Length: 114
Image (cartoon, rainbow, N blue to C red):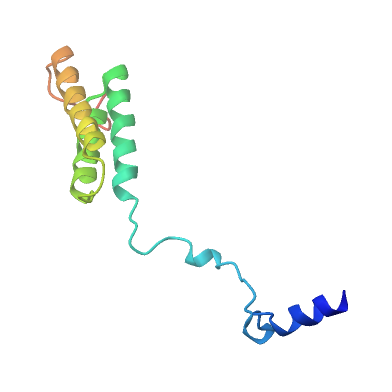
């Protein structure tokens, strides 16, 4: 048994002086510098506003959805999924069209309504 330990001790490739203890990264360094989540948030906000505009017939909400979809499209990268951005944009255009088809009067801002 001692001869096996003596053989392993002389051929042990580990070097205790070269070992470095793992330290988890600090919380302040969590976001990746090249990753911007603005297009994703705007895409989600545009879809939510589009659905609210179609269900509640709020014209200002449909215009906000179109605005968010344009921001999402403008800030998206070429490697992003273009189908999701295009579907969000088409949904927001559809919500504007449907709001004006059901009520063709001009939009009254919420602060001027009676």
